[in-house]
Length: 345
Image (cartoon, rainbow, N blue to C red; front, side, top):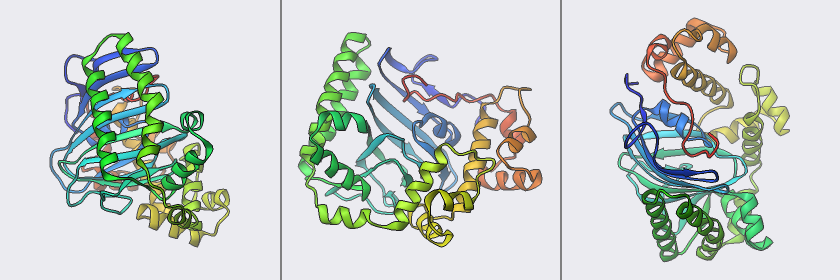
């Protein structure tokens, strides 16, 4: 981490753009993976650089009560694992990808958009990658669309891909980019309110119109017991006490054997449930250390609160994972911990 505040807007101390009670728009840039984790809420992510070197992430965003829309680009390659936002359908529209780019282990393809219901996240973001991300409240989809259309979208997202016609995907991307550009240029609440209404009213219709569903494919992919076990485990972990949860708790919560759970985590996240729990604790510790004011806490307090009771082991693992000791993180100027993507963040 660098000594300056790494989550910062283009100008001044507030995100560029404008905010209203129920809509926000602006731009910000981040130069540190820890700040990237903090600013990515409602995603709950663990960011792991693939190679040493500088990192940067810029987001231009438009946030409404039921939709979070942003364009982002990256400098540096990174693997991101964790949990996708609860209560939302997440859809990615890759604009520029690299050789390493992967969504759940699969290279982007022209005939499908990466998508997911609330569950496990595993993506590789390559150096120079640019993408649009759309998070849509499931309640909005159910209010706006016929039941069969919502079911088709959910089946597609359960397979982590929405099959689309290429020209339709390009048209949606152009429309969304135009909305973001308009929102970040216009500062008055009236204009932002109008753009918010347009986005929420038209996005569900545009998305369904672009898709061409193969119900047999999505049903077969959704039928995996290991995948369902992983998703149930992720749902359980959202509200679990990280300090006390164990693999046995995940087995009981998902009603599967440890072997099935192990396979589900390996297939969905590329690691074991035990390792994922350990990484959740270590990354949570880093975020707390990075956000702490001088003298407000100690390394031991944070480690104990997260169940990292063997302090020497914690320090060694922390240094191996993040390239610095916990004391170095705590000594730096605190990072912002709120996310510009949350209206009430």
